[in-house]
Length: 482
Image (cartoon, rainbow, N blue to C red; front, side):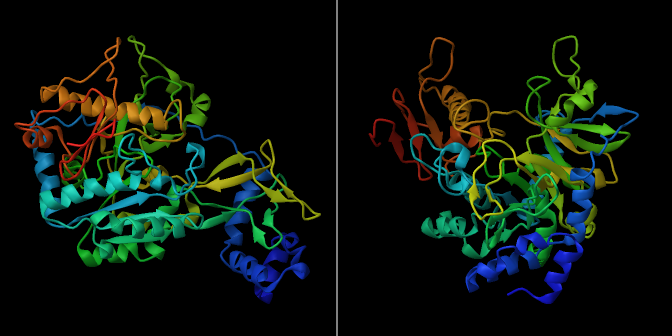
């Protein structure tokens, strides 16, 4: 039910219209709306509405924007890379490493009903995004004789379905006590006047507070406490839609540990000045990621060098390492964390209680981005360059850029190289592209070297495409098995 305190707060903050259907609600709807209202930080909402809705804030201006200094792609021929790999492997063996997976989204844009992580990204096996990540974890735990606690951030919209999916798949062969689900906060959507919107007479229209919400959520839900109790001080962050993410890369961990990192990042070279990725850079000496939607505000970020490549080349693949103390420190000041505004189509009800599904943006969502925490690190950036294939292939839609079809093509390119080196005849089209689907379980082989070792003496026929499972069994695209 609704307390007098919440009624008073609604009135003080000018949001009492959300109660306009209160007298018509049954007990369940009253309970739902009352519970939602009890979670709202009204002072924060006032600040966001005043800044973004009632006013138009000026863009930040900087005296100097410089490219972020990069660590070159890890190569064992370099002494620094060998040292980093050894340090990262030591950290894994010592049990200092845990994993943060951001998985609060739904698969709607993929044409899929359910949590995005349950999407069957494997073109032959139907292996889900969650399964791909879990198989990497199994491999690493076996290799380094360690436990990698897996902390998975979900949203109110998909928590129940995500937990059910893990149960249905027996937690993908991992120990249930090493997997912790935690939920990010929700925040009200507002209309053009800054008023809270209703999704139903007894339910606010709300959205998750962005992937930056993992920072306070990890503290509030006891994740950082659990990590400390396990002896974990280093958390590898990745997002569920990137099937290729190296979930605990020893090179990356090693550079982070050796250089005393609090928050470190991987970067990939931008394909062009308008690629839809954020840009890592130093703004007046402070580490920032400028969102691609803001590039026109800072035209130097669109500059090309003599070879037609972006001068500011450091694209953001959303792969980081965060130290546990850093998360705890930043979470204490999360109310001052940068927020971003998005104009969206938000289903809602009007004053007559009629549900509206708009065909153009009609309201606003506020969200935070985890990369904005980089501005709080007090030392030089730790930014490691990576290749795209085998590390970064996000899945945002079914076709086009950053899509299911692009992800499956990247699988074929990446694993096709392994098969080529193993002496397997890999079918290719007239442009030299791999012409069949290829899947190799990360539990079977997480690196080309491991694959070459395990494939010694094997003969494969992959004219129709092939999937190699964790136990080495083979499924062909035409349903043959070997």
